[in-house]
Image 1: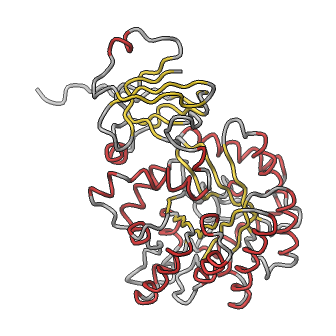
Image 2 (image 1 turned 90 degrees about the horizontal axis):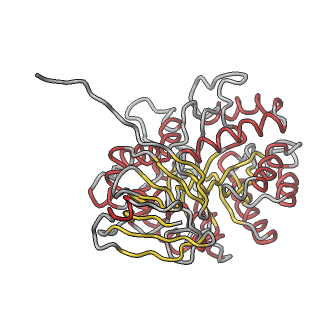
Image 3 (image 1 turned 180 degrees about the vertical axis):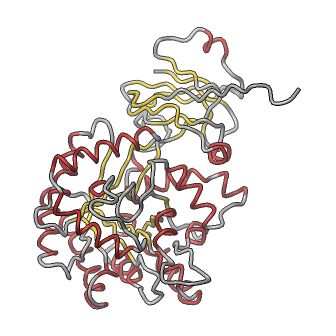
Length: 421
């Protein structure tokens, strides 16, 4: 395969890229000109990018595939709160079976692939004695591995230590093959149980050689400070880059003096952060009258401090969020607005938040990126740089995985009637 006339992120020239045996074998600048000769006489295995942006695939670092497409079944979340969402999901769990989960997950994965995603981290509820959701997701991960990368998080939705046999179910999930240890300390019954759960999560990650991804302080309570426990344990056990704190929305309500102290620990620990802009602004601030909190973690400040942070969707049509369409560019657009990251420098590197930063979070940087010798996995976007793609919400025109085309889309063609005489 040969790709000509491609723009690469943060580069002024056009490029030609060659692929052999599923790997990038050559990446060469074209000195800024369109190669019309090659474009007019294309070989069978040639792709003319026509000056559009070629970049690494999108990464969805936090989603709940086991709950996708279940909003309103059997009841809707009327209050819009996180905690009612958990109640509505508890009503849906008895209806789960392998066929139900498979059907919904495959539809959702197709939606994500159609929008440029090739790497997914999904949380699977282990507060279910059957573990049917987790087992089905692990099985699908293995079945789909040639088409898409999936990491499965063993996520104790109702508490690791507060839910009956929660710890035993977690260990069963890890033994079955879950890739990541999850937690939810702010939902444990007491502060002491929440703190102990963070220590237990790190212990399990060490014992089973797994990554860690915790739903951490997903609440407006400024006194919810389990993040410092997680980061401290990650630092002391030297696990930082393998640990992720998702949501951390309580940070929005932390005192600035405390945050100054906290950031020192976060930087030293090396842990990753995931923010879910559309979901968090929907769920948080629900107990406020006015002013209402935005309820997102301090994405801008984390980013400026050199701490890895990325954006995710979290949900697609489930008890917590009844919208969602698989478009990470939408989440990026919302996130930059909400976090007031609207300077031109922010726009120039905006796609980092749904590409490179997500790859770091998933610990896949050794096989991710547009570099000679790495897997030839990429997407082609309607636009010429981060700014134009973001501003116009450019479509994903092509998705290639290890040299094989996953998806192609024709650009929309608009025909106007005469607007003026």
